[in-house]
Amino acid sequence: MLGGRRRHGLSAMGRRGISLVEALVVVGVLLILAGLLLPALGRVRATVRRVRCAANLRELAVATIQYHNAMGCMPPVNLRWWRWLRPGLSDVVIQRDFSPQSHVLPWLGEAALYNAINFELDHFTSVRHLEDTYALRANLTVLRARVEGFVCPADGEAQVGPCLSYRGNTGLLDWVFTRRGWPDSGRGMFRSPPITLGEVPDGLSLTAMYAERLVGPRQRGARVPGGSVTMRALVRVSPRGDVPRRADDWLVVCAAVTRVAGRAAPDWLAGRYWLPSSGRFALYNHALVPNAEIYDCYRASGWGVFSARSAHAGGVINVAFGDAHVSPISGSIDLSVWRALGTRDGGELVSGEW
Image (tube, rainbow, N blue to C red; front, side, top):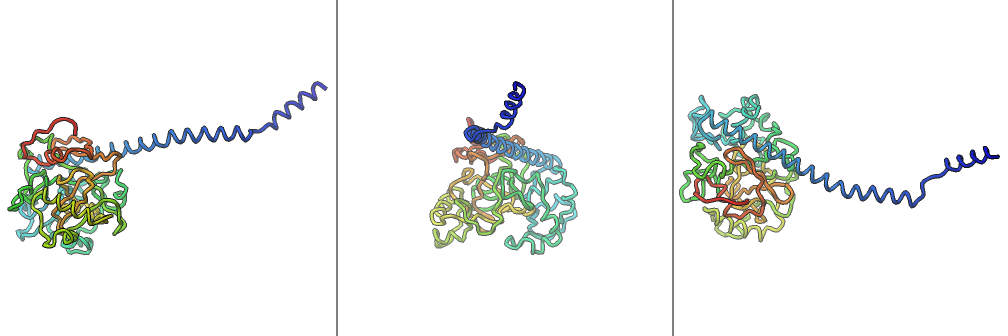
């Protein structure tokens, strides 16, 4: 009897399962843990992406300094006036709008890709049909090549194709130093003709070289809160279609465009290729603060406002300076400080937290 009772007791214990209350408690604990861990994991991933993005920027800045040391000047925004940078180029005066980033490829471990570029070809005559122009028939393979070091991991739109997340600083407006009546032009690290690092009286550590700018959407015509508008929209706010000549004038016009544009459709070509130059592809300026609520606005030819923008949490944007150090900059930075960091020759005193 006693042995039978023991067997009966063991059998009963073996059949005992988990009650509904116990199961609900376990599920609740797991949900609480997931609620605590998933946001933390998301923050860790975001931090990793931002750190990788900053590392890419620093490598690009170091490569640019190495280019300068080898060639005696900063990478040009085009080769129209500086044919001596490429011995053997013809004397035909054409734009040759190849990006500054394309010139530093050998110092990024991409010498083969650099050697495949035909710098003899004319500028990119049709950005709307970029792959169909004469300039690209010989450079089509290069145009479509992806360089991972040019892409910020946090920019979701840049994860497919030959995109460029890191733009060269042209100052307050565009890159043409000799343009008359445009006092804010040609004051950045990249201009035409190119400068030397000795022509930065404000100091290399206080002058931006590269910053992030979001790549345009793959879906053409996608409408989002924010974005960019071409000068066609200016007809609605400036019947004469006047072209502003100072950064402050552009700010007023872009603010007016923002008021009438509603949910703007960003430039779908923005940063989609790294080979061409211009503000649509390879350059940016400091007319507006990073991640500005005011839309970028510009002429289709590439003059205007091209702001630094990123997808990092909190509106933080990575900026590589002239000495190759990289700093995170808050989107709440004062416009005057941001503009001081964007000009190489303003003589401004910049101190404190950015």
